[in-house]
Picture 1 (cartoon, rainbow, N blue to C red):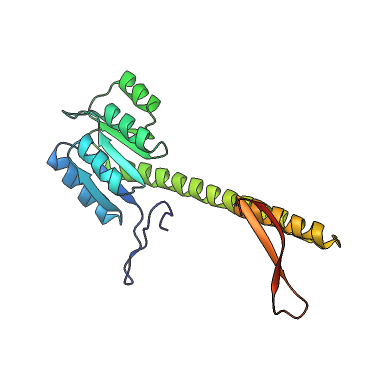
Picture 2 (cartoon, one colour):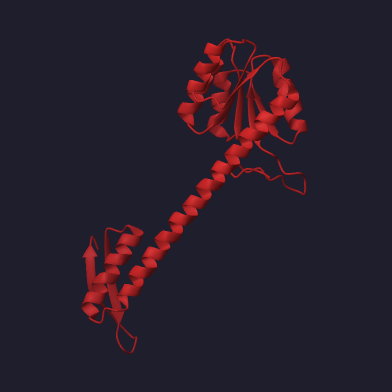
Length: 213
């Protein structure tokens, strides 16, 4: 299923996109490799030839996953990851490198890299890593959505209980004040005024007011 982080559903009855991926590499061979391999698996793939180009793309578009090469001339994978994380701390990033250097891998992980892949790339393992990362991302998005729904529910419930309390107030002046105070807090207003209709409904008179009104 598509992720809610970006609009992934394809239109016109075509197959839904599995996720949006930005692949960064200064070698055209690998950019074509990512585009072909991931495109065949149903991912929407955008490529960039440098870290700076990728940052410009990320300012305009949203991606579920970024794949970056470690050894690049202008900005290496660590510097690119740092810049991406400053822009979006929650962005998932995979670093790919041909250097089997444990120290480099640890340093990349400290910068917030999700996974560290060695070249030559094993296609099956690579796709499995991507699938796991996007599944983890989907779970995080779903958890956040449920949390926001629960917060909204309890907020509505709290206001509902406060409004029920208004029904127990029989003094009209006191009731008007409570209504204004409740509505001002609900909509974060700096002022409010309450007019009440007469018994025949032909005219109104100012009953009470608050703040900058």
